Length: 173
Image (cartoon, rainbow, N blue to C red; front, side):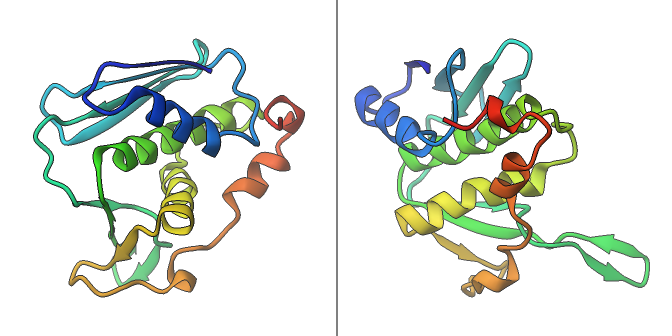
């Protein structure tokens, strides 16, 4: 992975963090750039055909940092469907950058295995959240701050969808 960081985060540590979490996937040709955002607390962009991921982190974010994600399953209501928001808390800018990177990595991997990269926001958030909750002890809460049980959000199989993709050999290391 071609990696460059222009934020205040430690580049060696951040690259090692990204590489460790991407170790099971083929990331040859992937270019990752971590930079300060132009105003948003964070954002990410994936250019599929160029194999380019941008991770943007706000300069003024307070840490620990709590942000909304869309990892919960949809719920049926009288007027249609709704996806409740859950909230992930990360201790520092490195873990926020990791979340954004993993979210965008999932989009890129889905494209590489021949799946549509569109309409996968919840899967991308679940993929990233699994790593942050399991490996970094980040807390996932509801809108009121109550801890959310794993059964309430860890549905589907984001990794399995990649492994069962029509071109899964293109992404497995």
